[in-house]
Length: 452
Image 1 (cartoon, rainbow, N blue to C red):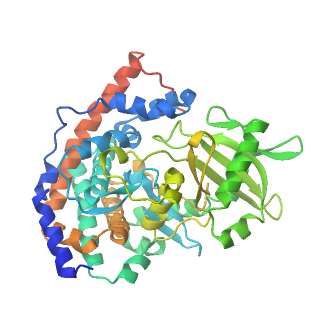
Image 2: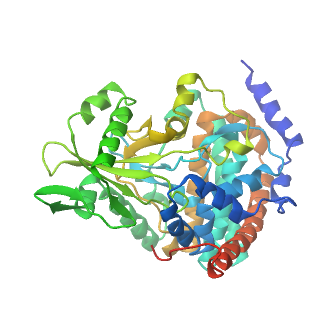
Image 3: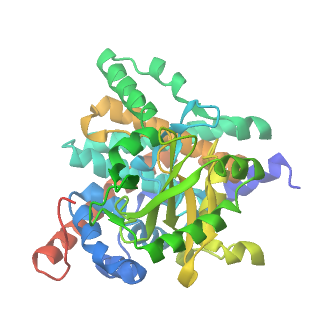
């Protein structure tokens, strides 16, 4: 095992591969792949009839485009030198992929909450995607470039400060660290902002399976069924329901024994296909309605398709044994989530389905909530950016060499300033790519369904 001093030296040596100021100098590569071609290639194995919804959602704003274009940004990040300081990446660390959820002890936590693209890679890729998303979102809200840059810099600075603090802690202290939302409200100084944050947290606490039961189900032929709202929610044929039953059984087998005992107290009621997110539209996602003690004791689970991470084409393959390889997609997501989150969903599991497709399962709603960035003041957006940066640092400190990363970052603001510059450059690129998508839709080269 290397000593702390050796780990710090390796971090400082990484500046020879990519200086801290290098992160701010970004221009599109001469051989940059066509963004539309990247998106269309992603859609080749998706449900074709749903792809117009994906393009329609991405066309709404530059920020919506960025949310759906993780594959495009992965290629852009891979085209420039990186530090080689590896962590478990979220892979899609934009600011709306952070949020609140309930721990097993029912505390409301704030953490990274999307892992579809998780994969080991250089730590700065997550930081850059987070900062870029903040700059793009700020511009979408009408803020000028100075304000957008300050918000992006705040995220990178929050990351660096938190990472340096975590580098001084012991292993268990890092592993057990978490962001409890009970600690957040006192940090919000303005009364109106505090009321806004409190309202968001209260809304998350109401976001449960029981709430979903009221919104997503109806009485039909004397039985409770999931409401069909094509194309966003589609009922399944009997043969498809049998397939979901098999998928569900295989997923159950990956849960810990105590979770299987709990899950077995529920009975299968219904399932449906559901459209989710922006970048995920077109992947196969099913919601499963289970009933416990009675109809007033529902549980909604989600079984979502997990393909290859958008990072895999740009990074060395991970070392996996045969068992892991057999469930690479779903197990990759589950493993990444367990590694990065302070606490994970008690029903988090994986399975393989027909046609070699992989899935992961979790609760559909368990006090989950995300920030409403459209209503944030510039000050509140910067506070939120700082929170996301610090939270990302905690996730990276659990999986990477925090001493090496802290040594690479140093005590100066060079890294934060460079990432802020990158964020504005990439916001320009995102605006251009978004305009290209809108133009292709208007010209009829790409079919899009707006407002769905």
